[in-house]
Length: 408
Image (cartoon, rainbow, N blue to C red; front, side, top):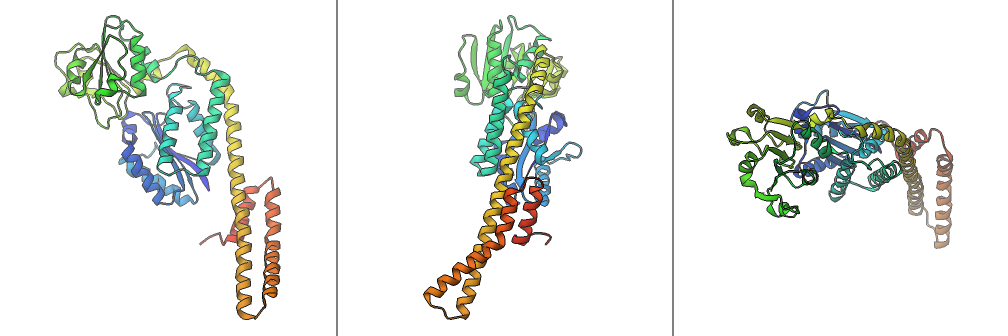
């Protein structure tokens, strides 16, 4: 049983590649079905605007290769030079680091932890998680919580929406401006909160579902508008912000009002919501990949704190590996005991079919056989239980000897 990660993130690929692996829920369901049908034991699919990664547990290397093939087919484009694969301890370490924000566009941000929790919950709902994956993710969340609590990494606000606000302020003032926000997810909500704290004149809030937008209306400057009228109100706005989970662009250049007052467009979606052709109108377009260039004084502080916290991650990973190895050992020990009992029973059935024994003699023979066959596996079981170094090699060797493993 092995742990691995396959995927793509903003660290390897730009927006043009990532948009092809921004999986919707229906695609994730199809992905899970394909993985499990190919013999992948357990899996968690994480797909956000900045990364699409699959964490999985498998038995044979061929299964991992098939998982990579499924990923590439789901993307429907060549991923050569972009797709990364991590195995074993390196994959576990990477998962913990991702959850803690070490690999986020905005260093140490909290949003990725929530996204991982949602991905884990979805995988559990799809029955793609068992005891081992549950333990891996639960220990990961516990470790990250300890780091965030101990070092107060989240004490100062730092997130993609926070950095986006700084990027907007480098281009335009919020004073007396009209803002149009499309979306009602986590990033759209944060952008709305930040805009409410600015001296804006008006905020147009738009969503496909009016009830979701209305639930966010807590300021007299907010006006909820129908999704069908988004172009009209976007054209009336100085700043347009879009952060939806739509699989297609929802703001297209050809449909945008030719006469408008839009100065800045902010696209926080993946795949992108806003047509890059908007720049031909003289509009400044900010996309997610642009935000890495926006520096903040607190980033250096976070970097130092995360460096200190990495020891906790390493410790958490070691605890997880120890537990996984103990489970592997327990499985082999149980298998050895079961094998001895099955062999004893098979020998017993053979004997009583050949020799006529009374009830007392049958009991004696069964007892002797069970004791004899158990002695055969007792020494390997003791060796495994007390082994410290090379335990994995011992487990593999004993498994092959008693379970008929090895080359086929």
